[in-house]
Length: 78
Image (cartoon, rainbow, N blue to C red):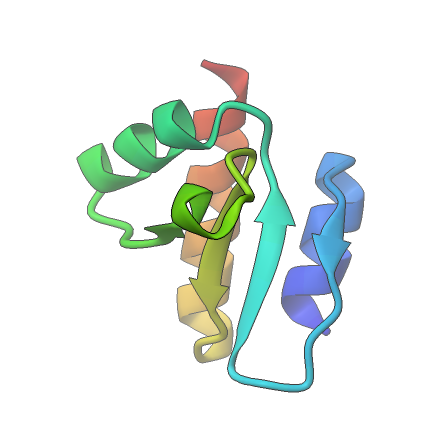
């Protein structure tokens, strides 16, 4: 729920999931992926699955999700 709400606030589309990960559409996923890595936040690009604009994100504890969402907000603005 925390990630879904964060994605909505950022205006990002996502694929709802009942698992421990969620796919979010970020536009230039390769660029966002690199920016996230620079901040020490690890996500998985999924272009190999035919989704070049999406990243796969593992759902974490609330404090980790908060850190991730803040880093994502910065990365998509670059």
